[in-house]
Image 1 (cartoon, one colour):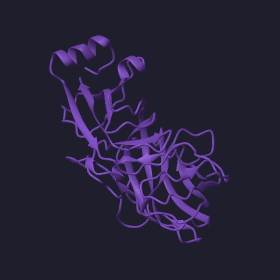
Image 2 (cartoon, one colour; image 1 turned 120 degrees about the vertical axis):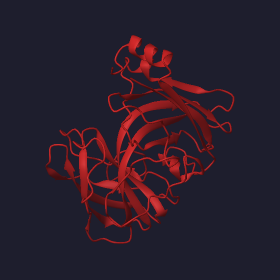
Image 3 (tube, one colour; image 1 turned 45 degrees about the vertical axis):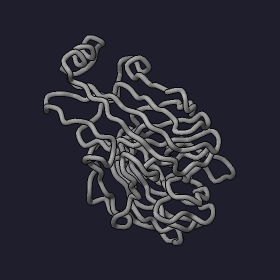
Length: 285
């Protein structure tokens, strides 16, 4: 039966319907105050530069060690993320974690072109197909930018209407793996994880084009992600930070669909080490 109550979760653990999966990321990109994609550091899961056919949506279905692994379950059951524990490899600063299911990405977006770049959406979303709760995230990938960029993009909302975004600023990343946007055309400043969208919709089904009015240089990728949860990371080498989703979300532990590509974005308050390790625990019923 689906996991809804404390008794349901207790029964799942009593019956052995649970799994804890370890992960480790070595010190990699670390810039204070910037959102960073952890796949640009070595470790487990593997490094992933998000390459492919330029501008073509590339769906992600996790396999083996390319994202956080979890075991298969019967078709009649649901899988939930129940807990997260993290440790720092070295003493660093306090940080924030966003846990996402990365649904796919548009690779190799040309940062030198002022022309409108039209994207290919022949491949549909593999999960959350209605677009609700899905946000686009712009990440410096393959080649970092050389200056700030300014632009807009068009996208199809969860209501199937195509819109043009507010102006965003692609803040000079200098390094691969940095989330490169701030929510408006101003600098300095750091924004939310996602690219800005117009109000009144519940998410994004697809990105259809991007236009830089001030090209930043380099190559970027736009991810489409569904946020599963958040976590505050203390960054102290001797202390683990924990998130128990059952306690902190009113028993509404995030559902993990088959094929989910579980990824972490992190942001330290200062220029601390980016290395950390830990584990995620799943239960199903």
